[in-house]
View 1 (cartoon, rainbow, N blue to C red):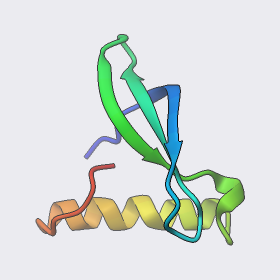
View 2 (view 1 turned 120 degrees about the horizontal axis):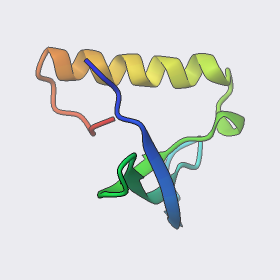
View 3 (view 1 turned 180 degrees about the horizontal axis):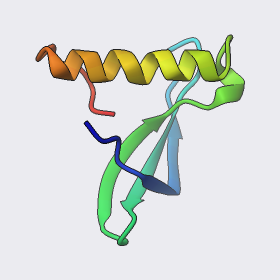
View 4 (view 1 turned 180 degrees about the vertical axis):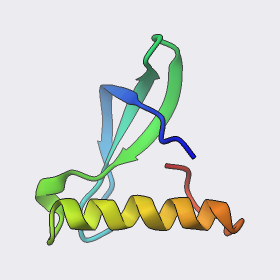
Length: 73
């Protein structure tokens, strides 16, 4: 499974819920196509930094693999 590479091009809003205070960005794919809105969690807002971010993507990939509904990565 491949994680897409996207570029955040426009800050939309912050999300008031959640301990890490994630942000929503409009994103584009590598070839410039609109990829839609994505929730972004920054390393600085995570208690364990990269470990927390890694755990989030692994959990998302596992959920997708076993067909548990979850937000797309």
